[in-house]
Image (cartoon, rainbow, N blue to C red; front, side, top):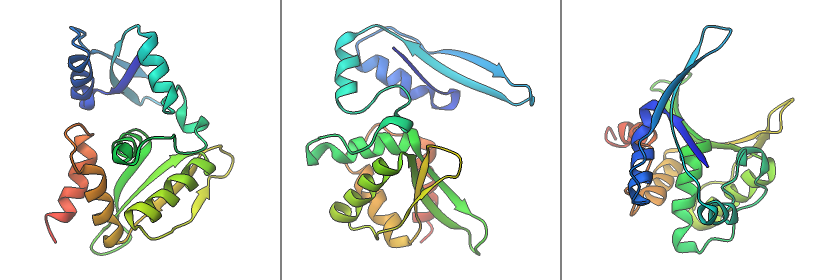
Length: 181
């Protein structure tokens, strides 16, 4: 198995290796593209059939963005951890500059059916307002986005309760807004 993240998020790979009681150290590499952009990532590789099948059971599979069609059967008390993990991997949080002051928005990318199920879960169990899932033209990927302050606060409190492992750069965007209310 190979887990790969942006080099700035390498600390998560270190936490993962530590949780495995492993001496694995993330390796870094840069990849250049024809348009002169580059990707600077870090990764760890390891072999474990047990971890592979345990992750697969909960929908964590290669190219999950294009394969998941519904929320996995996870006990409710752990669902916020799953949603936070999915958000860290296939979510987005950004300030939309069309508004003054800029408006924070967050959302997810994935299959239409999966995003519908995650949206419905967040509406029912977290109290978010129901929004539309949008299919992207000429792509298998869809997107769902939330924007109201009420949705932001409820989502933030839900996914970060009892959390000690998360993508810091995404949480910091929420913190920037919420600390200035």
